[in-house]
Amino acid sequence: MKYLFSSLACLLGLCLTAVSAQAQQPGKSAPEIVRTTCYMCHSTHGNNPDLGFIPRLAAQSSAYIEDQLKAFRDGSRADPPATMYMWPIAQGLSDNQIKQVAVWFSSQPPAEPFPASSAAKEGREIFLHGILKEDVPACASCHGPKADGNGIFPRLAGQNTQYLLAQLRYFRSGVRNDKGADIMKPIAQHLTDDQMSAVADYLSTL
Image 1 (cartoon, one colour):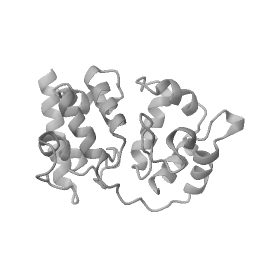
Image 2 (cartoon, helix red, strand yellow):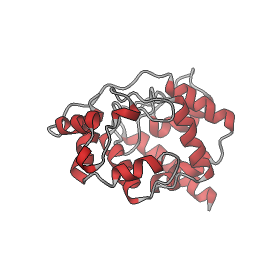
Image 3 (cartoon, rainbow, N blue to C red):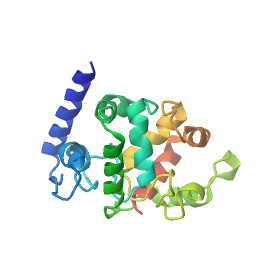
């Protein structure tokens, strides 16, 4: 079963690369694991702009990337995309390869932000000030006023809206129960779908 999932993950990656007009081919300076595996979905530099459900990794916190890869490897992060795509890949990674991936992507320049939407203004307000009457703290208190992250708190600036919205929903439902879920679940449970969308839209513009 493990090999079946691994084959499916590789096939998906190849297909997504083929349909993505802007997917970057592996660069010689990238670690081998990035050139042979990660690039298929994330592009070599972590800035694939076309696949909204796949996160941008460029300029992401090295500590966060490393932590998440280990969570994929040990199965503690169990949202559906993780179990289907990342578990088979991460299970074959050594600590050294995980470190290489984290350092590489964290050192890449961030992607260009997405255009602002009509909901971005509301999202900015929630991100910077929270919703006190709903017990929702300001997102900026952990992720930074520019959403550039802080250690294990991930960079959210310029992230794909679709990916951010999916993660908030996973936290709210309890599907994501990995490190950080104890912080995010009670926050997400007090956000409506529209509020989640607004926050995600705003973050994508940074």
